[in-house]
Image 1 (cartoon, one colour):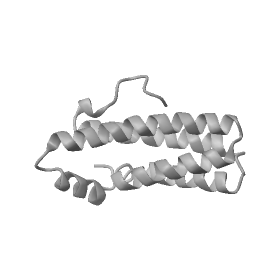
Image 2 (image 1 turned 60 degrees about the horizontal axis):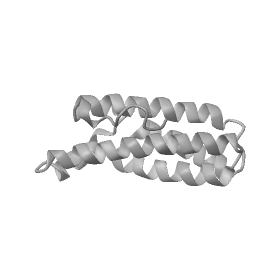
Image 3 (image 1 turned 135 degrees about the vertical axis):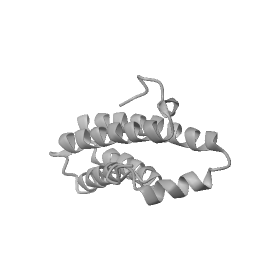
Length: 127
């Protein structure tokens, strides 16, 4: 497990909590990925509209769920976007969003290897 992508301690606690029901872990991860893709699409739209409040709110939301899963790089990228939204300084939001998209792809790859390929939502679900 790549600790920069998924914090092993955080993810292992989640695995232990769902050990008796492996389908629950798979469903949690799939729901997270689906929601993360949607949230990144919403962030892209908010940046295009120059809506700093929406950028702050959506980035904060995804930061929290990413933190719960242990998605370190994605959490950090969202924290940067959240700051930009809070400070109403979206000049660097495009590159920061690309970092978040790349971080989500890395999380998807990692989860696919750990939980199995069926953890990935159907293609075309946002991001």
